Length: 189
Image (cartoon, rainbow, N blue to C red):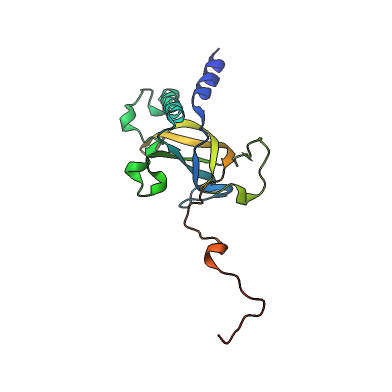
């Protein structure tokens, strides 16, 4: 009985985002170390405030993670306002039009996410999934209490690309940078 309850609680901390979630800082193909820490896969998810279904599901999962993590908080349920929470307001914290009227959260994992297309077929071409494309992402929330930092973190599950979007990151394409050159350029010009 207790095992079922724990499994049920874990299901309450998992969310699959809606189809208008945008990937940013997508470090999803190779793990990277941030500030000398453990290598992880990571992505920032930009979620429109209009996607109320996903936002409500995330808030419900965060509440479930707080309940599930009471043991990490000394056996008492902490005031939610006193915790570091993963869902943040892009209008308040980012000076970037891509985050306007959106929430965002950072998800990471030491395990590589499975990355699939709309038909749930594996995507092998790394150029297909990038910062700026739209995807559904499975995420899960869990409590942490380390070195005086207490809160709820977001684990990265799997990624399903839904559609292309304007690439983020300010990288120009070769077409933007160059024009065609004749076969025999005039080196004297």
